[in-house]
Image (tube, rainbow, N blue to C red; front, side):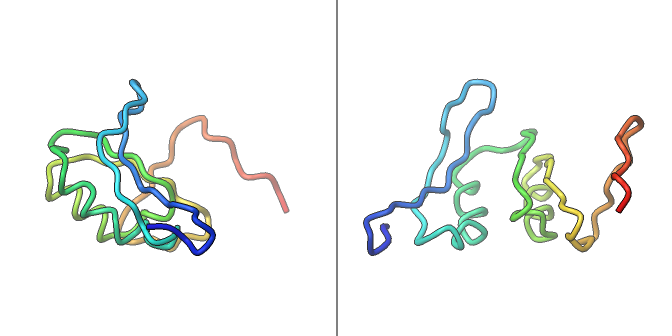
Length: 100
């Protein structure tokens, strides 16, 4: 799939340590990432895997999907993200936010 200017948008799964793409899907544009999350991972054996994802995927539906598939997850949570039935963990030594 390509934009009118010919730009192709790809959504991929990869092994971080090896830098190997294990799955990939063409999406209509960057807004298609959330819809491509489960179909892409449906093609892979993720049992016992740790799935990392950016803040766009920090939603309850994706967390629930991964847990049902037997995977673990680490999601990026931005300060403006409302809790989605998940608890963030306070890590000792985490720097405090600057005042202001």
